[in-house]
Image 1: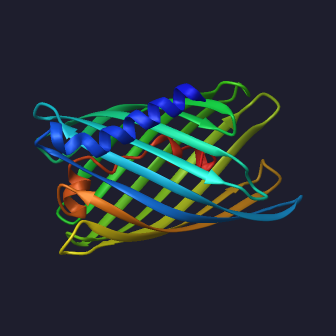
Image 2: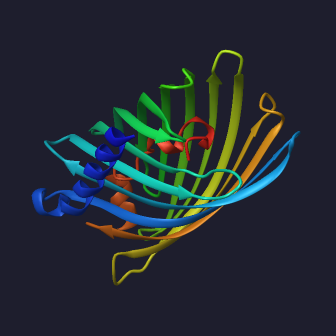
Length: 254
């Protein structure tokens, strides 16, 4: 826990200080409220959590970019009574045809269990649309589970400061006696005020797994974000909005 917390604190510190040490830097820091309802054959429960996150893209040498993102979530309800921390580092290469490819590694402390993950990613930038794909593999320390994930994202920019997005994901969790497939779909959007760095955002996510007591989970989140270095579209195209470890594996790490 202490190692992960230190790593996440270092990432968040980098987000704050990044503009001072890199000329071509863009990123954001945000806070959100999340409400989740979970329905299984065993009953129905709901809960809420608070999330603080941040991400920064640092253009090291053309065409290489290093992206760091981290998050902290706190919950105290029927679903969870934990403080979870996450940190992910990406190295990506921007090709001349508007395609960004790369790899990432992430570490998280979730419900007192350490989770690590590695993966590959690709992003295609069109005029008003960004398409992304991620493949990842991870493991948990205490429960010794193998995790696999495939995720696709689409973002549409109404203009440089208005974004609509959707994602579709599949994950498999293999923990010996438990071998579960999880599907999830999400929708969201963000609006940035033109005269400053602040924006508001919201989203909805639905996850299902027949293997986990016919689980169905719905969550909504709303929040505010501060972007430094440009518009929402600039942030996306610079590689500052790449998926972190908490967004993989059917959303169970959040």
